[in-house]
Amino acid sequence: MKNLFLTEEHELFRTTLQDFFKAEVNPYINEWEKNGKVDRSVLKKMGEMGFLGLEVEEKYGGMGADFMYTMILCEEMGRTGSCGFATVVSAHAYLAMNYLVHAGSPFIKEKYLVPSITGQKIGSLSMTEPFAGSDLRAIRTTAKLEGDHYIVDGSKTFISNGYYGDYTVAAVKTETGISMMVIDLDAEGVSKAKLDKVGIRCSDTAELAFNGVKVPKENLLGEEGKGFYYMMESLQVERLTLAISNIGLMQYVLDITLQYMSERMAFGKSIDKFQVLRHRIADIATDIEGWKSFMMQTSYRLAQGEHVVKECSMLKMKTSDLLTQMVYECGQMFGGYGFMEEYPIGRIYRDVRVIPVYGGTSEIMKEIIAKMVIDKKSYKPAYKA
Ligand SMILES: Cc1cc2nc3c(=O)[nH]c(=O)nc-3n(C[C@H](O)[C@H](O)[C@H](O)COP(=O)(O)OP(=O)(O)OC[C@H]3O[C@@H](n4cnc5c(N)ncnc54)[C@H](O)[C@@H]3O)c2cc1C
Image (cartoon, rainbow, N blue to C red; front, side):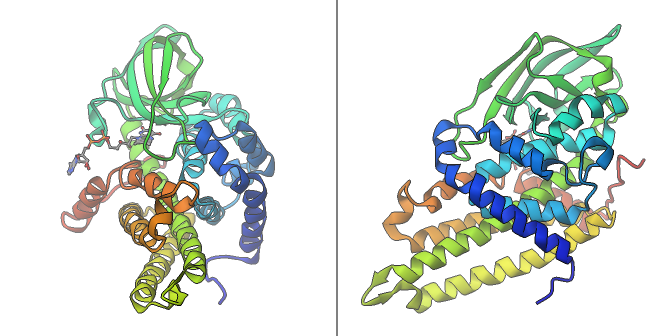
């Protein structure tokens, strides 16, 4: 059936991506997991293919494409089956770069955005602190203006790409409120520690300490004091891209489960002949179809310039919960083999624990949705204000 939201060019792009991931990502997933690192060369290759700057203006080296291309990229990243790989790319291309695109000055764009599109520089986003996770207004990291520089003191935690990346887009407290600025991770006074995680092990996660770090005034993003609004705006896209990858991963999990069920014999037949398991698959396939339609529609509305805060939160919350439940149920179909490292479902079981947590927890998603549905709260676009 023809997809109402996608053109032939979009579908062609999907095929190109699938071929790329099959050759450049799938064979290396286990090795990256073991090394705790995605090979930097794949990001450079993605940069060369134009995958890291899909929506960015052509004058900065981007493709000037619409959000539906981003949707396809995120879905296909999910379909590689590596949540860690998807996290590395998303933290760079959607968490960090989003701020450079929307709030970066021409100087920032030349210095950080252009090399980010080619994959020469890898970015991260530093919002979370040891005492400020869901409650981002509670951040304590300070940036004091002294002449031509800000002096940054404080710490951040759980920062994806914070260990191997080159720069971080950090939320800091300035005199006027919360502001965003770009900090080079090799600057004097920055120290990093790599965190040991339960899952998504190929995605590096860091604790960062800033000790009197001198950050040039030009590295401020947008206006001082507007950082909280920029974060609220950018989180919308972050959550949507996470939800899209969740749906891609659901499709991958369904595919490998169906394959396994068709091959595994019990009581003289393949296990995909047992009605109880068939009905479970029917439920799962229905959930995927339903949420995929909502994802397409929401992505399309975002591509048309609509502000879809509620829908992004709904998608993030529900796809995270569904994915978690689905991985458990599909893992059950693998019997003991589902608990073995050799089978991707085991790794994915570990990986998905973080899905309802990062990018805003499911409880926070419910808070946003409830405020919009019950209290009729609305959120204005920050970058256009
Ligand atoms: C692997 C990983 C990668 C991450 N990557 C990044 C990154 O790149 N950049 C970044 O800035 N952050 C990142 N994070 C941080 C992530 O966004 C936070 O962990 C998350 O927002 C929750 O914050 P917290 O861990 O401090 O939990 P808390 O905020 O302390 O929450 C603890 C519990 O209380 C609940 N809770 C809190 N407030 C409320 C409320 N008002 N109502 C109901 N329940 C509530 C939460 O839902 C949660 O269940 C990452 C985290 C992980 C684990």
